[in-house]
Length: 320
Image (cartoon, rainbow, N blue to C red; front, side, top):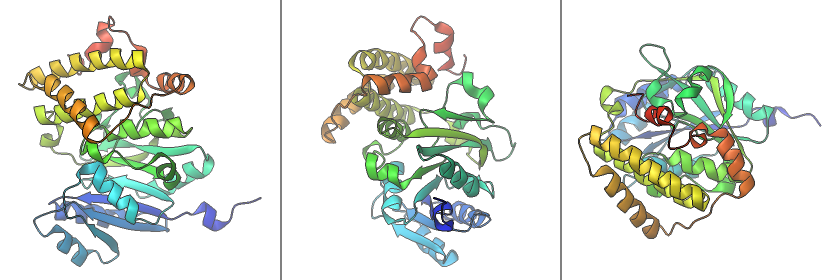
């Protein structure tokens, strides 16, 4: 049976977060109006800004649905609020300092139409100013950098620009709001993979990212968030033996990253906060079964190394 036009042109909700950056956000929303795909709604979630952002955006953008949060929910929590207030069958998320190429949504819809089991699409992130690949937003092993302009199946996605079928949220649940910031993509991806969905990196769907030098800085607070959330993901979803070895590996990696950032507290504080958050949020272990773990490991080259492979471990520190 052939598909109807409505099936081939589903509503796409574009969700943007704002916190005290109205001018940047308005610039991004205006840029999104260039999309060649017609069936779009734009949803702006204001994460409890205290500078009048919501009012400024509402005044400037009367075709945007503005959702105001009474508290700062963090990135995953704010995006969850957007999901709950969006109507689209496909949800596209983009940072408010990033710009999607004008046929980006059209390409994303085509990819989803091509294969029903693709549940998440991750975009290629280029530097806004140079037009070169944004290495700071590359979330995959460095060995895969040569694939950056191609499409490949993967195990996670970059939060700067990505799309998800609503059906994935309906079956896997929302983003882990308790993470607040950093590495929520990894945890959510595993839940999608457990349900049989495929994740696709699309090197031909380009987002140009304006991140400032300050945004690149991995200070102790950011590192602690990342380690905490990584440990929770490992403890929740990895088989027991692998969760033990990966916990030790990540503690070593983040102890060194913390040292380079001028703090010895990153590893112990991240470990402590991971234990506390798992208890506070009542997060239970739900490890991948053998078949899912094999599939996940095959997709994630980081899991195919051993502790004695010093050259691979050095890649965790930018090759230094």
